[in-house]
Image (cartoon, rainbow, N blue to C red):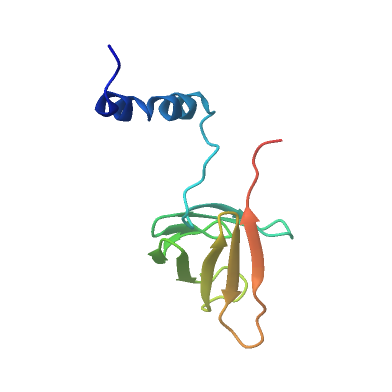
Length: 115
């Protein structure tokens, strides 16, 4: 007896499911700004939804969207009181700009904590 097309159609996804289960966890990243970010000069920050840990270590809230985050720099850090905006440009790169005169856009990368 030959299997029907309906039976074959139901079984078709099984090899892909098996392959997905064999892949190591953490190989895929969500397309979101959440995570740990590092600048070339050693500064780092962390975003978790509307919460941020700033480069100076302060934990505060900001304006969160999936690909964008902004906050006001706290008093104890350089550029205190300035608005800072970050935009996710790829899975591993964020453009950060402190919104003051002549500020350049900084490129931040996802931190690599594995060594």
